Amino acid sequence: MTLLHRDDCTLSLTVGDRIEYVLDAGGQRIVVSTALAGIDALTSFLEQTDVHGADEPRLVAASRAAVERDGLARYYPASIRAELRRWCHQAGLSSDWDVDGKRTHREHIVAAVTQPGTGRAVTISWGLWTPGEGDEFSFDEEYRGPDEILGYSYGLRLPYDVLPQLAGYAEKLAGTPSSGDPEDRLIAACEVLLDPLAGQGALRDQVESWCAALDLRPTRRGTDRRETLVEAPTRPDQIVQVSFSIGSFAKRLGLQEGYGTAEDSWRDALYQLQFDYAELARLLPWLKNRVGPVDERLGPDDTLIAYWRALAERGELTPRRPMEVRDRVADWLTEAGVEFERYGSAWRETLLKVRRAGNDCIFTLSLTFDPKEGDKGITFTEFYDYLPIGEDPGREYGYSVHAPYDALDTLANAYAPGVDGPAQDRLVGAFKSLVTQGVLADGMALEANQELVLHGFEAAGVESTTSVWSWINSD
Image (cartoon, rainbow, N blue to C red; front, side):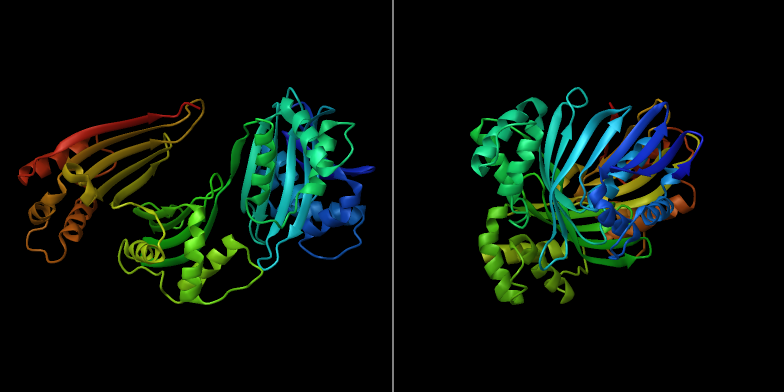
């Protein structure tokens, strides 16, 4: 059954011994397939229902609806293939990818369960790339909420040639048979040894301990967990977002207080705290005393998030001025005896942001204030971000003027004489007026805005410096 037809590709579905999505594109025949026994789970996932008893016509209808809903008609063929794999993965089904009759990738789902207390889907899987097509295999421990496409994860990546060693070690621990395909042997052992509800990161650590026993050195991979606790408007063009993160690499913990837009939440400022996961032994009892008990089914990670959410609901994580929440939580951590690092002291005002259609360049004028930067505590920047286009991978250029932070009052008095208010606000207001008047603008000669500001700072009697920054995408 044809699900999608375009000039550059055709997507169809066949149901026989296996469920096969066939993508014909660019002279290649790409097949993403899963076991026929998964028809009920796959259909229910695509329909977003819990109705059982699926058959081929129902799966075809559900697949067509999903093609439309997920916008596959707009995808490149490679992205369509990835989306088909996602369908199987999120339905909790193992899948194979074949190109012109040769298997290139296999994902085996060891377990797919629901986490008590959170409703998150927990998926434990092995990704196996056929030798010659990537020469590696990976372990992934994934957590995903009902409304999330990505979620967060903890994983490992290893070269394919060590797979027999790891399979042999795991099957000795599991007492499973030691003959046959090493992939199947590793999978069988993991189905015995791995408890999907052991806790976030626990299974990654368990598999990593097997590697350590064999003197193997896997590469850690994964997606950080980030929980938004507060998001509120601060002015018409800005929001504040307070979030908490757990890193996928080392489970390092962090609190972020960011100011920006919904699309760029840290555009204007980012103030952070970071501390080690081991500090939970001190922090959790302190938070329990402040917040009270939470669901006892929750593990340490989710208990911590539940405490932060309770504090957010009580209004204790809503900032009224920059750095307020970051510094308040720092005081709490100090009281709890938690060692932490504090980051961020800058504030950036975007004066102008324009996307030039002709060369796909984002042009920006901004003012940045940072009391910790001394002689560069006030910085004006004329910035060019050239996005990838054609064979050009992209590049960036910035032209800045720097003035000492202690010259803030002098500059504010020079640019906004007779205006009341804090010096930073007065200087920002004056620069925004210069943009409105077209004195500082897009379409001027390269470095012209930088030169105008340099002359303005010098005319105010402030000793200033300039700098140039550049970056070229090497991909």
